[in-house]
Image (cartoon, rainbow, N blue to C red; front, top):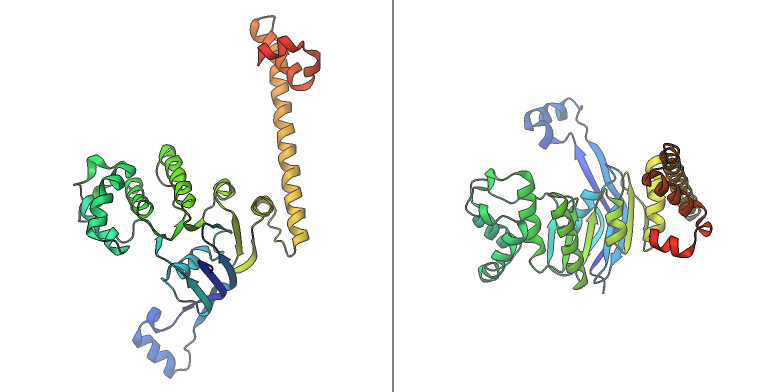
Length: 318
């Protein structure tokens, strides 16, 4: 049985209805026959399924419909068309700082957020110290939430969601919170969680994160499903090239073309970098007969003609 299954999910937003323009203007426009609404389909006919332990990376440019789809998975929104089915408890980190009371303390907000996720007081008592330690907020437990920096708020929300025990975890651009050290720690924590069999969905503009963490990819563009696949590296290559060329693939052949262009571009960049490094080392070599010049010469030979070096010298230079 699939843990998450979307079948033909479409989500529509309506603008210009009486909730937007007010009751008075709505009545006037209805009487004068000038009342019109505009429809915007954020997602159109999205279909995918995830098994236990899967990690899905949703990729796409801004406005692709990624965050809207996550709201449907988490139960915040009901699809206009189609069907979304989930099995198990869900921890959704969509808007990290939502669900907190600015006037309550860090301690009080931790218990409040835990209660909103459906966990008992006893469970939160057991996990509280671990949550605060992971968020690195030991010295701020009795501070008002509004006094925290945005990074601290994000760390707290991430820690609460990840140190409880969901069956499904949903992350919308949250692995980039905090400084570099915390980002690394949060990434490692996510790997630990996934290793326990949790099913996850991540939206990230960091393709390297998607490559590293995900075993399936859902590519969206302006609400349309471009692909749902387990060929993560191939489609990430194609997507990175799409970001540069804006050539949207229409077939699997187009995916291969984009991926090949991506590989060729990286190889060209590598060769150019190597050439610049050679030129730099050659300048150092031409500058004199110092140890630096000798080292530069050896580096040039090692990179381009290593067979010219005596094996013993080569191993020593390594």
